[in-house]
Structure formats: structure tokens, C-alpha cells
Length: 181
Image (cartoon, rainbow, N blue to C red; front, top):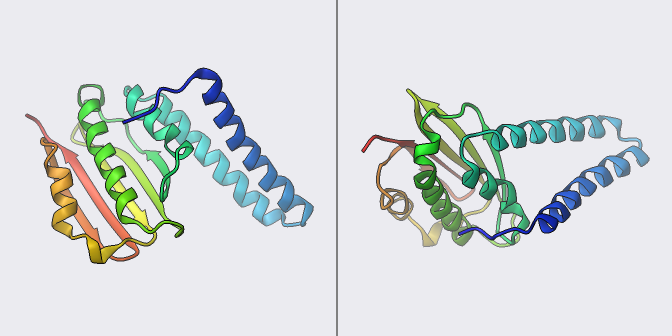
């Protein structure tokens, strides 16, 4: 599922990420691309705000998994957004984490290695219940998968309702609503 990170290892990865951001800014400044620097700074600020929201949700296991996911080798880059923290998040965290892990594995298996693949994870709520969205942009091996395959990966976990699902060769969208027992 997830790796047990040592504190020094966590800090090393996080420092590496920040150094990458600073090098991008410095390189664009050296090239005189101030508009690109503005865009990069806005992206970094938005990412920091999302990390802050995710770190403050009542779901540490989910937050840890999403924050550290890109530090492992995968076929896509993961980003996340917390729109609203669901009231039931703490009681549903293990279930949400299990569904999330299954879908992350599914996308990792079914997208092309080396393509510009990106997955956005969105956490929200509807009537107090958790809603999560997966918005994939990239290149899927559509010939080897079906919508039924994706849906069975989700539904087999129980207590989750598929609100919307669509799949094409270069995009896939899934919205899940976690229902009562």
C-alpha cells in the first residue's frame, strides 16, 4: 500500500521538490521569461495551498499517501485538490484510501509508460458524504481495458456509488460518492 517513510527521507524528498521549483524559477529568470516565472509562482502557491488543506484534513493516512505518491516510480504524475473536507472523512478514511489505492494502481497499469500522463484527485462532499473525483489526462491503453473493468475495480470495494464515469484514449473521469452502510 504505502511505504513507511523515515523523517529524514521525507525531508530529503520534500527539499528535492522545492529545489526543482527554485531551479525552474531561476532558469526562467535567467532567460528573461518573467511571465513564465509569474505562472510558476502561481502554480507553486496553489500547490502549497492544496498541500496545506490536505495536511489539515481529518485523514492522515490519505493525506500521507497523496503527498508522497510522486516520490515513487509511476506512469503518471498525481496532483490533488481539496475543495471541501467531508464531515464523514475520518470514519470513511480507510474505505476511501482502499478505493483510491485501487484506482491509482488501475491507472498505473493502464496508461502508457513515458507519455505525459497526469491524474488529478479531487476531494469534496455532497450532503455531508465524501465525494472523490479522478480526472486523468494522458494516454491510456484503451484497447486492453473496458469501462466494465474500471467499474468492477471500484464497485468491488463496496459502499461506493459511481456517479459518473467516462473513458477515452486520452482522458478518463470518475466521480465516486461514498454511501451509508
